Image 1 (cartoon, rainbow, N blue to C red):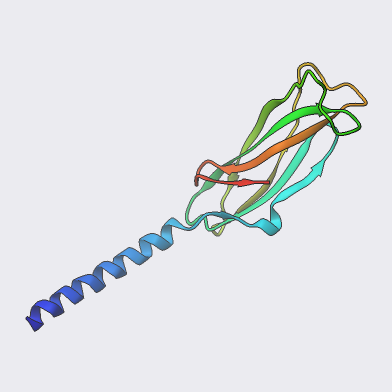
Image 2 (spheres, rainbow, N blue to C red; image 1 turned 120 degrees about the horizontal axis):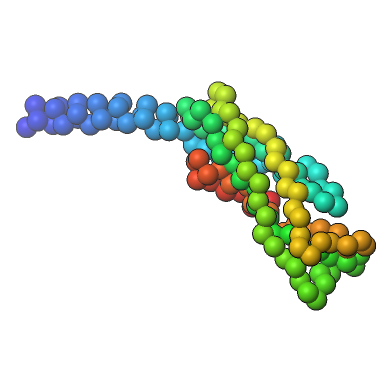
Length: 138
């Protein structure tokens, strides 16, 4: 029995050693919150800067910025017509040392157009890395 136990323990240790590098190679993708968020919102656009870490050996990531957009009046209320539409913009960003960073700018064109004094309101803003399958609601 002792030889059998020793063989089983050796095989278990070998499997553990082989499993650890595979898990480290795969990485643990996540957005770094301190460097992620809306960096600029104007009357016609929304810019989001991001930093993502834990990407392992990925050569690049495909990141999508999406949002619901609608016109609002100076009081912050949408018109009764409610021309809310979904928009998105995407880009590919290189990974260096397991990290990627960049920014995306969403410039929606609503139909019918937002006429002054109405402005654009962005809601349900989400940043998604489709390569790693992670998302962050902003």
